[in-house]
Length: 116
Length: 114
Image (cartoon, rainbow over all chains, first blue to last red; front, side, top):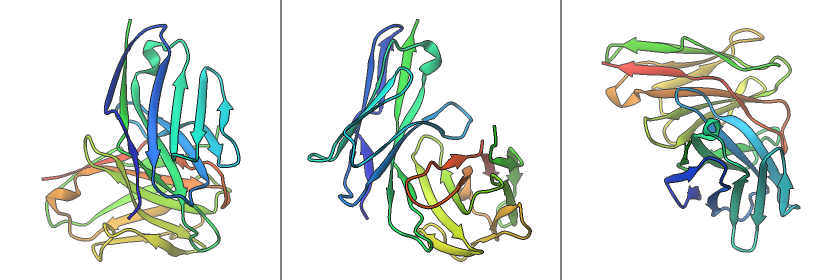
């Protein structure tokens, strides 16, 4: 089936640098995307979302960019901090289950390591 | 802040035994999900549940798996006869309504089959 995947399994940065995590999706019908952060031993935590009618969305220190032409998402983290160290997943929402619900589908994840 | 809660946090079971993983979704949410994550791998969809029935399931969700919402609050995943390869983190998630809304995840249950 169609899937979401991530380009880089590990990204190492220095504290204070900006981080960019990339994601490619293959389902052209996907119209809603979420970036999740997963710390060791914990469940995925919502960071930021974006709908397909947008190409950029900003949160606190994070920005998500969506390029529908090439089916690519990126997560930019400004002034990366040690507390940002985690695995980051993008998820696209596909399909219509009964009642019109989407089902989030995850890529493998990128491990972000922030060095002090 | 409302959250999805899962119990137990860690479950160790012998191969062939039945296990029940429990979840309490956020109270006004309507859509419920189970995912699993084998160590070091991606989060994989197992099943979605809406209006007291399964709405979608993946190929992983075979006859050994079942889900139930026995009362107004709990959402359970049962594995009838566990296998070693069922060892994973199992995450429950819920969504308030259908389109374009965030899925909230629990902290997971680590299932270890020995």
